[in-house]
Image (cartoon, rainbow, N blue to C red):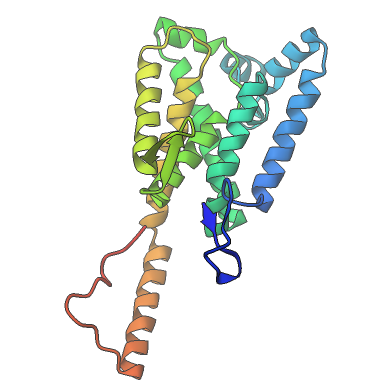
Length: 254
């Protein structure tokens, strides 16, 4: 992104990313990094025990009633690459969403998509198939379910914003999200035990879509839209503003 300070185009500068951390993004990254370092510094045996206790293990939820796991699994990560990708994506795609939505809704969206992604993994692990049976006794960790929900929201909010794959190839955000969704779907259908929770990713995408779609269709939003339209029409009449040609007012932008 190129910026021109003081309104003078002769002096330009480049900035990377969406800017400074917003409050929720800063808190989430701090908690995730802190939890990763704490677990990483543990002895191997204690580390595995902690991951089984706080990670998402469907068999433990049913047998040991560990109902906190659909929340706590989001704050554990398996390696530096795992947490680095997730936190970078959270910053890159979540910052603008928090600025636009406000911290309260963004936090609610993040946790709902992450929790529903975990519940999707649990539900699929109960299916009577060999791959899903392995999921029932496997630990899932990471914020990827919520991150995929954030990616979906970014693609729907900024559909034509270019995303550079490998920092070289630009692709509109809407197509990037579609590609990620197809990869998650095909990987989940043909999963052979690679250790990547594709079902969790897919659950985050679906949860995000349902939540955003429900928000768009909510009666409260419809009332706000009608009220805003009434105020705009009133302002036009008051100041004698007349639109020429076809009006685009009825074309809602989401």
